[in-house]
Image (cartoon, rainbow, N blue to C red; front, side, top):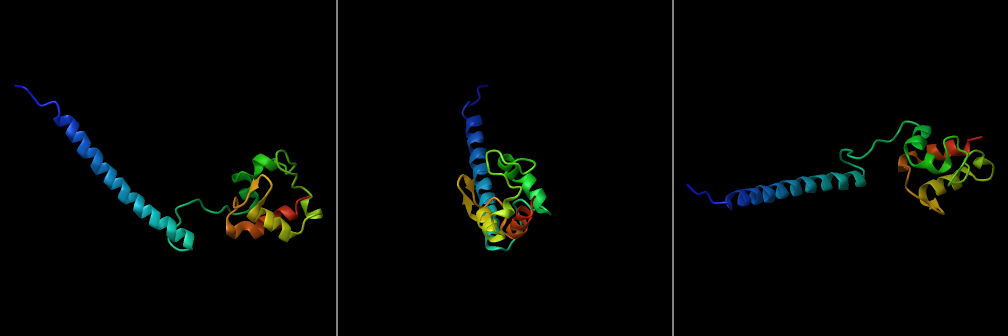
Length: 122
């Protein structure tokens, strides 16, 4: 009894196409949630905001450039930055970036607290 060797390939193709359609519909649902999140509503699918500015500093990429003790490194020293920059200037740098530092690393709702924290470092 001879079997047709093409049948397994056809079954794999049908399963692959079906899986592709199922995953694309899931992606559409996720895209709607992401759009709602950007508008301010909907369930949060991204990362949650850390409780304190110090936790944000440690969990974001800040520590890689500004050092674990705010002593600087690739980025400038943050200790004592309040002596020559105002809180609003620090907020602007956090929000928009400056030089090689990109803006938008800190969530919008935590920028004020982070600016106060950095401004107060000694």
